[in-house]
Image 1 (cartoon, one colour):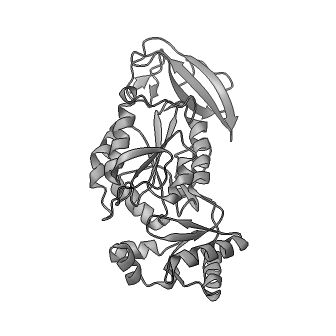
Image 2: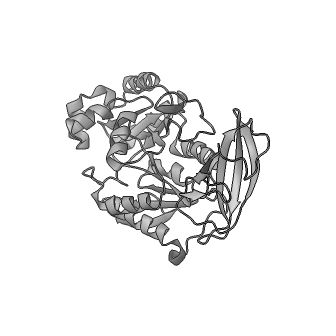
Image 3: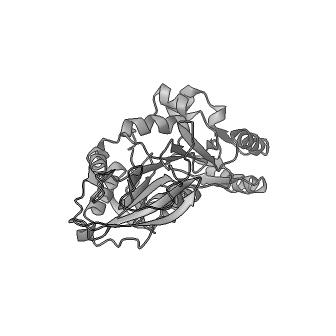
Amino acid sequence: MLNLPGTGTPCISRNYHAVAPGNLREIGRKNAISYYEYTFPCQQYPSHKYRAYSHSYLTTLSLANTASLTIMPASMEYVIFSDLDGTLLDEGYSFSGASKALLELKKHEIPVVLCTSKTRAETLFWREQLGLNTPFIVENGGAILIPHNYFPATYPDAKQDFTTITLGASYERLRLALTHLQLQGIKLKGFGDMSVSEVASLTGLNFHLAFLAKQRQYDEPFIFEGKQSEGITHATTLARQQGLRVEKGGRFYHLLGNNDKGEAVLILKKLYQQQYSNITLVGIGDSENDLSLLSKVYLPFLVQRPNKTYASPDYIHAPGIGPRGWSWVVKQLLDADQAGFPRAPEFG
């Protein structure tokens, strides 16, 4: 732990060593909380920044009256937004190929934000398996879930385990729209038309995870039972007439509202920006429905699909299928000085 010079007040940090007193300045107020930026010289980094927050009754602030301040690290180097299926998870739903990379990220305190087409229930399962405590984006940008007290500046009085920011159309609306497509002669079948056993058979998930996959709120995956080439154009047109979209994922097509992963990433970007500085946003995906995510980050990576192709000729191509490509990306980030990747001047 680092102490504020001259006070003995502990600071949450990466154990950097301050070598001289720093400067403290107010940077804004919100919800009866004042926010301060504390800059101090240290041996590892010439001018490292931390942000502090305190109740606004501290009308004057100096190094002599900071005993009630909490100092938050404000110079996280990267925030990684990652898809799950086909990216961090392989075809057999294993992340073993990325386990060492995940440990390195934890050691360097680099947050991984899951950005997936999976449901809240599924993502909570995988979040626990991966040992993550970060916000996450579900059902192709249908909602953002933020853990309690993760962004205290924005949600200081949150009572629930998660604050939910809803962006997508309701599942009831999507099911009605899908039924309309079926009545128009398009031969397709959604998750809502399938039993848990059918979902398990189609996806390769075990029964429990298939059950979680059916707990949908903002996105309806579906398959074509007729000629896909004929059905996709018709389905896309009819969905658009209802104010909805059809998007292609790694395994399924998806019927959803006007939300996407990129829109959700931008919202979280602003929240991170309110609390931290000097962050480079990184995105990792494998499919067409990840492209909106990649378009909103500073360092966008596509990993290879099982057939060793990429979903787009654009963005940075990571050599390796799924988790192996994911691990390659992490190695490049941690070796950024040697790799020559540019850093975002401010927030990607």
